[in-house]
Length: 211
Image (cartoon, rainbow, N blue to C red):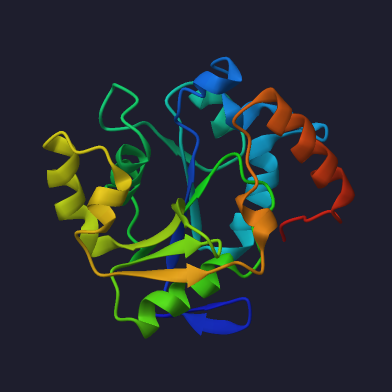
């Protein structure tokens, strides 16, 4: 089934914001709630991704009540040991019903407005099960688009102890989406120094407000 979205007809896509990590290099802070240019980080990500998808879910393993205030479904990992992004993806695929799931991290506030469209176009053109962003030099595995049919193999991989995202991706029909024209999309926060640099960059950007 296709839907009308942003003036175009396309397949339905759910959006997943990954906010379930430990953020050890940030002193264990919940990165989605770290202030950036006077707003929580996740607010910037929501502004970017919400207009591009039909539903947003937030993967969070703590502060779920805070994330719920943004008006979107909040899900915990099906595993309770902070098992990484694949666990968040699995948890989302278990609850969303759209045929595609767009995945982005909570600490990339400068995502392009056509991100989902480009990921989906790449996947459809390549008859692929998933599309993964590429910055021109390397894969950016937590910015991706997964088909819902990957639920069963992902569940088997994670329940079998698999955690490495690149290993699991390599087992499926994957295409890369060249986003080298948007290097800002891959700027994120891993250290306090990253935070200071990104804040300067965000403040220099024009405001991006969702409709």
